[in-house]
Length: 346
Ligand code: PHE
Image (cartoon, rainbow, N blue to C red; front, side, top):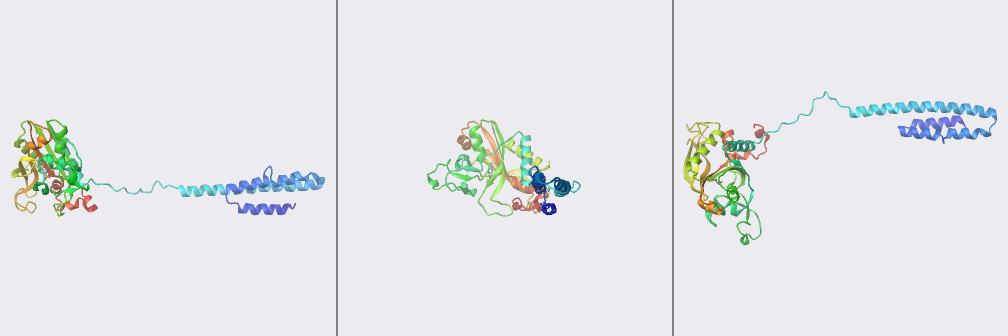
């Protein structure tokens, strides 16, 4: 066996080794217990003493030489691997972080929260009800006669249910047109005194413009007890508006109006806070703004809900409308525009 050739062969393989695994294999094949060098050593026994000695020295030298070489390469590979890993995993903790954009509370959420706080302060419990409602709770129980044009006052979204004619009023579904559905739901299951505020989304299939959206928020108030009067209604409405607009000079006036579920019914106007009733574009020079519907709960509504010998008032107001007035927003469609320039102001 030509030792020089063997050395050359091993060095070539060493050159080609690129990782620790290659090196370990090389070590095993040539220097290991069953490796080539050991193999040659054990086959020396047939040689004469001189030849044995010479070959022995050469093999030993080769062994030491290779061990050193392999060791050196191992170290080099380890160092470069560490370096590579360090470069890859390097984290510069002095770099400024990614800026996290700060969110903004939507103006409608803001208004809803403020109104809930005010009504809670005035002794009302905040409750909610379904947005998909049956016709009974949205209309019939609220004293809307079947086929009466009053139903058309609120352009209803009907849920497709095949032949609706075969269904009872409690089986016909719609998107609620007002939060008044929760009046009937609540009175069916609770005994007076009842004092609730009901915020929520309502839906009307109407053409949108600067003041109308197909979906908007209302907050409903309902107070049922013995001897509830219009004076109580006025007191609560005035106080809530003064609190909401943070203005003790807010005045209200009641005008007779019609809603099937109240008698008497009122349209409530509020003094214009923009011009202090001097007349401006917001109030069209009137000094008053029409803002909500209200009235004394109709006895038919109480009967539908199984209540007797009680009185009560109810009112419903558009949260969108209140927010528009408070923040001076000129178009209701801004609310759902998703426009950050608008939203970032709140
Ligand atoms: N539900 C009525 C509407 O949406 C408002 C209202 C509520 C009127 C309660 C009177 C009493 O127009």
